[in-house]
Length: 112
Image (tube, rainbow, N blue to C red; front, side):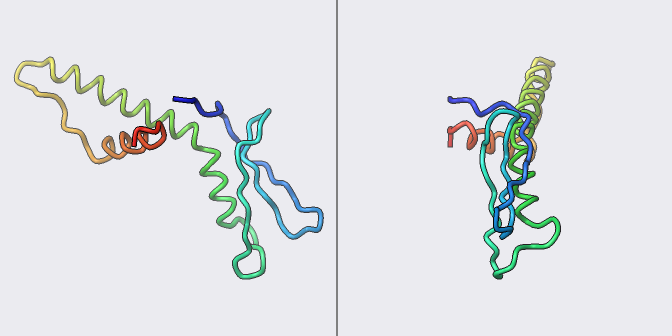
């Protein structure tokens, strides 16, 4: 699997010269990763902190969320292995949250 650009990622605004609005760039200290544009659905840009800003922050948080999901699944698997070694215990039941974390990791890693 190809790896993603290492974090941290941050959001940096880029303003149009004619002041039509702002494009938010998700970047590292060296590289641009992606841009989130406001498409002005009603003909006017959103005032204040709009959907564009929240989407950009979510994208910028992706490396940390990926690491957190991997750690969550690894910790669960380690506890499950230890529990399965106890006499009379078949392991720990996987919860919906751990199953969802596995599904998301599979999507990220191209296994699904």
